[in-house]
Image 1 (cartoon, each protein chain N blue to C red):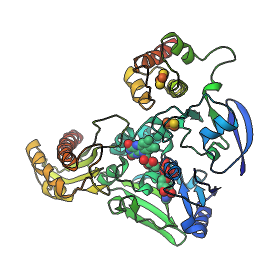
Image 2: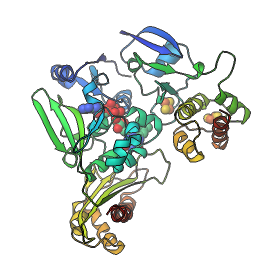
Image 3: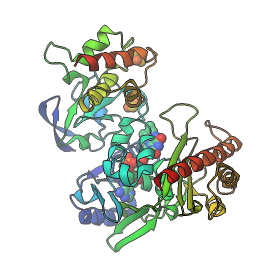
Image 4: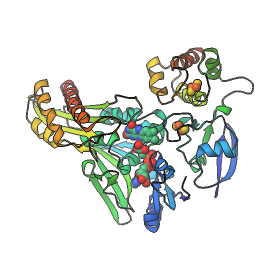
Length: 153
Length: 289
Ligand SMILES: Cc1cc2nc3c(=O)[nH]c(=O)nc-3n(C[C@H](O)[C@H](O)[C@H](O)COP(=O)(O)OP(=O)(O)OC[C@H]3O[C@@H](n4cnc5c(N)ncnc54)[C@H](O)[C@@H]3O)c2cc1C
Ligand code: FES
Ligand code: FES
C-alpha cells in the first residue's frame, strides 16, 4: 500500500492504493468515476483514454502510482459546471455517438489534439484519432464532430 | 494483475543498487505498455517493480557528434522532435508508425529495445542508422551496436542487473537518404506484417558507397540483411540494380506464419518492401547530394 497525491479533474486528491492498482481501476472503483470505460484491457481500443498532464494514455495499461504527482483528466472533468465542453456539444449536435461506450475516450483524445493543434486538417484528425475504435458510428460522424468543434473554437 | 511491491529510485545509482539487490525477483518499468500486458497475462510475475520515471539522467535528447537519446524518451516525443527530424528522420518516421498516439505517448525508446520484441518498428530504424545502446550495471558501462543487441524471441544481451541508459545515433554519412516502410494490410494501428528500414549513401560519382537494410517482424529478432547491403556496395543506384538485390533478403529472414500471413507471403512482401525502400532511400540520397 502507498499514498498517491494527484490533481484529478482540477481537484487535488490523496488516496491509499495497492502498488499494483491500475489507473482504470483507481478511477472507476476507488474514485467512482465510471465515465472512463474499460473494453479491451490491452491498450488497443481507446475506451479507457484519459489525459495524463494533458497527454492521452490508456488507463488500462497505466499503473495508478504513475499518476502520483501528476494531473489526470477524465470525461467527468471537462464540462464547465452545467456548460458542456465544445467537443461534447459538437458530438451531440453532429451525432458523433450511438451506444456511447467509446465516446468518453473519443472526446478526451480529441481534446488533447485540439489543445495541441486547434485547427487540424482532416488528415491530422484521422491520424490522431485512428486508435479510438468505435463499433457503431462508422467514424464519419466522429471526425465531423471534431472538425466542427475545431472550427467553432 | 499480479501483486508486486513498487519501488521508485530517484537516481540511476539507486536504481542499479535496487536491481542488484533484487535480481531475478525484480523488473524495471518505463512506459509500462509491454510489461503491464505481460503481468496481466501472468507471463511475468516480479516481486518488485522498479519504476524509472523519476530518474532525470534517463530523460532528454541532445546533439553532439550525432544524437544521444535518453532511454525514457517517449516514442511520441521522438516523432515530433525537431532535433530527431533533422538528424535522424528515419527514426522520427518509424516512431510515427508505432501503434496509436496513446501507445506512442506511453512507450519509451529504451523500453522498445529492452523488450526484445522482433515486431517493433524502432529497432530496424536504429539498425539502419548504425545506432548503439548504452547500458549500465554497478560494474560499469558498455556500448552495444543495436544489430548485436537482440539474441532471440524477446531476448537481448542485457544482464538482469543492467539498465539501458541511452541510445546513440552517429552522425549520418553525407549524401545519404533513408526510408521506412511498414506493411499494414489489416489496420493502421497493427504491428507490422513486415517492416523495412533502409539507408543509402552515394559517393561523388553517384554509385552506392554504402547500404543498410534492416527488417522488423521478419524473424525471431530484428534483422540486418547484410547480403543485400554487400550486393549494392559500389553499384549504380538505378531501379534495376536495387530491384535485383532485393530478393537476396530472403536468406536473412525467417518469418513465422500467423494471422498476418503465411511465412511464404511474408517472404514475398519482404522482397517487395525492401525493393521499394531501397528505391525511396536512393531517391532521397540523390536529392541530398
Ligand atoms: C496495443 C499496442 C500496440 C503496439 N504496437 C506497436 C507497434 O506497432 N510498433 C511498435 O514499435 N511498438 C508497438 N507497441 C509498443 C511495444 O509493443 C512495447 O510495448 C513498447 O515498446 C515497450 O516500451 P515501454 O517503455 O512501454 O516498456 P515497458 O513496458 O516499461 O518495459 C518493457 C520491457 O523492457 C524493460 N525495460 C524498460 N526500460 C528499460 C531500461 N531503460 N533498461 C532496461 N530494461 C528496460 C522492462 O523491464 C520490460 O521487460 C505497442 C504496444 C501496445 C500496447
Ligand atoms: S480498454 Fe484500454 S485501450 Fe482498450
Ligand atoms: S458509439 Fe458505440 S462504440 Fe462508438
